[in-house]
Image (cartoon, rainbow, N blue to C red; front, side):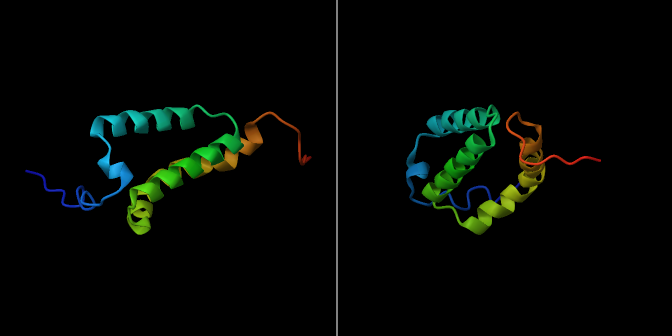
Length: 98
């Protein structure tokens, strides 16, 4: 049998997020994921980031715990934040002639 003691490490916390029905949490989480993935503007993606930070604060999870588990996902997401401004339509800020 596999043992994962870290899964329920913070299940005892008393926060608004912890008190939600687990089915509602899954539906809300999926809605948040699909609404952020479908964004096409950097400003809206930043709003999605702020919403995620807000929900993290609302859950009262320790920041160190969250950052440790987000670091591998960030390696996938950060290149998008670097590439998106250069691939979206809009007014040119700077042109580099080579």
